[in-house]
Length: 220
Image 1: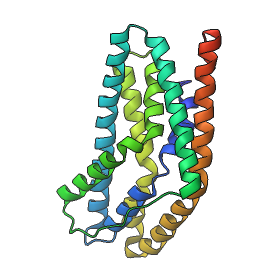
Image 2 (image 1 turned 120 degrees about the vertical axis):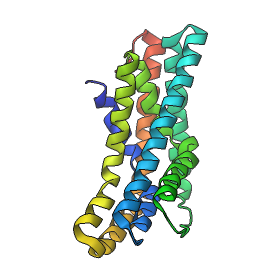
Image 3 (image 1 turned 60 degrees about the vertical axis):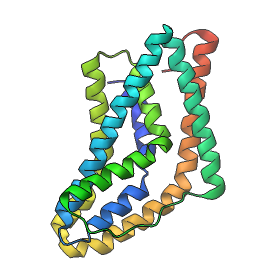
């Protein structure tokens, strides 16, 4: 689908989540590393998908209420673009802040819950996810197609993080030093790339919205 040409760069920005990776690495260091890290990732994915459905429904309701769906879509796109530029500027000045990792005793249920909580705490700052949802709504898909596309996006988001339980299952305790190095690399690369990618994505969304406002048709 052509929409993936737009969603893929958004996804690349969205997956730069060293906080989730750090918690997964912690879960992989417990007495049941594969089970608990998998449960935590499933909790995060389920929460992200559920939040996406709620956000999409909310945005779609506003669109229907105002009876100007195309105009509102691009107003939202412009606002998201501005938010991305603001976030890029903030990150460039201060760097990404990573919360201190706590060390709770995990069960399968609590790991799932922690994954969900990590997601819900980050939702207000998940600007790329808002951008992805906006693009899905703009695609004029039916409900089943839109939900399927959102689910596919969430599964694609989870895929890189699945390396934690997979490597742990294959390498056992030997995976821990490797995962720690990957975690440190993700933190460094996100500090550099996040402002750059967010800024570029914000400019693209603003350009697309501006094209619609000026000539009545979007760039993509």
